[in-house]
Length: 297
Length: 289
Image 1 (tube, rainbow over the protein chains, first blue to last red):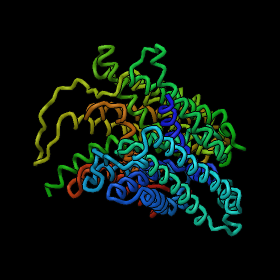
Image 2 (image 1 turned 30 degrees about the horizontal axis):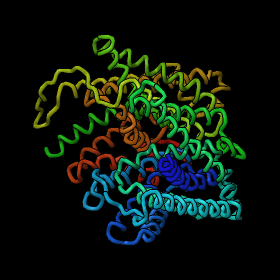
Image 3 (image 1 turned 30 degrees about the vertical axis):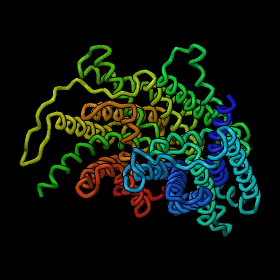
Image 4 (image 1 turned 180 degrees about the vertical axis):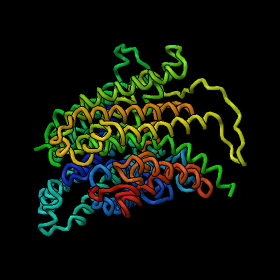
């Protein structure tokens, strides 16, 4: 049972990192990034490839963070030229393109077979102890990321991001270089997602393209909106609630709910989708958001 | 020359199905003013509902198609009434995000009922005929014919009927249309019915052409969006032309790239258009930011 809780906590914290990154994009800057999973995937594959090639895990993690951050640059250039819903479509497309490349550049990624045997840290320690240590380090990383984004959004820089979210033209006419600010927000959020990818790869020990479906992006969106767009505490809280729901419903079968795996999973998605719709319609500020990010034009 | 003929014809067949989806997207974009990400899943619903008509109710293909139409339009109007209409006064981003939720609910409700396995319509396999070295099956000819007739019907409806003219007026300027005495809410509802009906038929045609899976609509959504954007969002003629170009481009690239990258072509064209000429080929307004 402890092992299960540790495993669940690790996955929840990895999603927490993704949510912190997306909250910076969407909650603070108003950028509608529907391709967040791309940065997660790039981080995971970068770290897996490097460490399989012999690099230390720390190097893999740093490279994952850097590569995902770099990958956000083109999205940044595109984002300033596109209205919100076009950006949504382009970013979905971007994440699908990343998955397409991972699926087809077999020489590099081994395609649908994926990369197996991604090294796990602290393998010398007994099972259980190594997971606890991993959890401890990940908790530290999430805490540091949280402090970082909190500091960023409370700085003058963060105020400009919110100004852009509220009214891009106004921010621009006050002499703020909107392009620069959007790109920085995207790069930082994507880098955090890349780091999450590295933690994921080294915890799960293998990466395959199917782990990086658009559904992952939408999970993170639901977590951020549930917690309250624009609140970093909310992003983590929303992730926690979503994870407890997703994991908790796995036990429904043990309580005699007569559904097979596929149906149960489908039902879970129906509930998650309904929750997203209900939140947007009835409580767009989520649990902790200060205001409704979707109220402006 | 003939090496190109076959992929061009295949591309036109795919493109004609994309066009029906893109028309629905562009109508919704022009009148309800947001990108309806759930549109692809209504395509899927159309195919599944028709499938149920065939296997569940034992109907012939045409009555089953009517079941597919009715189910898709009905379910879509429920989503419009409960989700899209209440959100119409809010920022368009709210509708886009909510449409993701609608898509998730719809897709997984279908999986809940029908599972993840693929189905096909009971259509006899007929050998392809050969026209000057280009192979085409009767099934594909039917798809092309149905799609073309629908495009013509929509164009007549938009140009000549009263509600079609009202729809174009609402697309141009909703406030002005309202002042002119047009019942905007009614026009928007009729637009959704047309958009959903086109999606349902596209789903059935796609299901007849290949197979029915829970992901078929979502998987083609990007191509259809690319078609609508290339043609110029809000322009029905553009949606058709753009979709045909996307369909043909996807097939032509398979001559030079691994077929797996087919899906990337639509994305590249779409992004390039958005950056270079955001109004597309036929789009009048450049205000897309």
